Length: 322
Image (cartoon, rainbow, N blue to C red; front, side, top):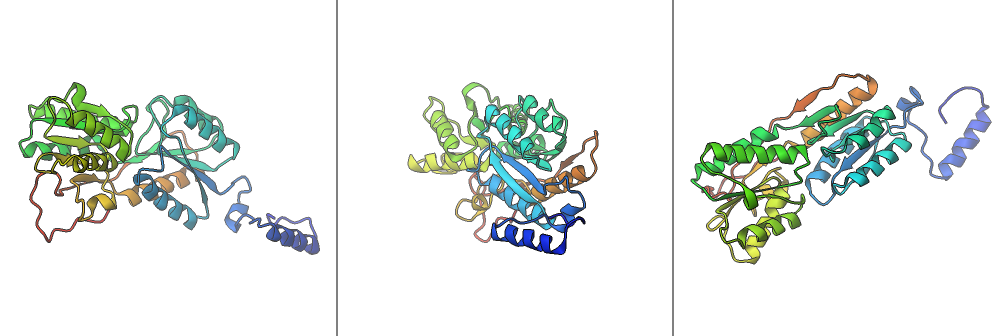
């Protein structure tokens, strides 16, 4: 199978014929250079419901295929116990490396399973501050500041924020960017006006219900993901709340459907395919050259002004492609 000498031509041909009949695909020539390689990497997401993650998966699998790697995709449901099981499974499968978009602050023990197995990994978007590793993402704090500055420019004073899990470093950085920038502008966001929820539209609907049925509903809801914002918009539509006339909403991610003319969400655009490609490139470098020093790459984000924040949008304005 690996092209080594020591067997007859007839035996080799017979074994390859049987393997082909069973559907077995031998390693490609690249893997023969290092028979210890499986040519498989792991890709770990918090969920596969949020369209952000399939976008990243598209970028990673495309880059991996071009380099002769297959991708083992799994998700953790943002559950630390599940992540530990996933790490154990990836280690037992002897994958060559892992791209991890599901790390939470408290996941140090799970991540050390990979470290003990000498399997390199790259953090994508979020990380665990207790286990050093390579990182690809954006400057979430700066992006949070930027979109909140735009919200404040409208003159809103009744502002609420809704983010994903606070034990996600990216969600927490976004919330801090939102809240600290609002405070600098004289607007305090505290208590029930700061909500942490699941990273999907259902989380957004639940947050919107809590905020908009309160005694003092906000004028604007600043969200830490597009899918959360979509859930807020769905709740508003179901209850006859006009956006942005009665409620302004902003998102964060820049997903294609959020930027479409139908929704045209004011949001932060993350360069999704670039981040995924860079994460695989960083992992490939780490697999080829192990090292105890790590690097961090921050990709450039972009503020997209849509129609959900209250800005007038010209009919001919087209949202950019991410």
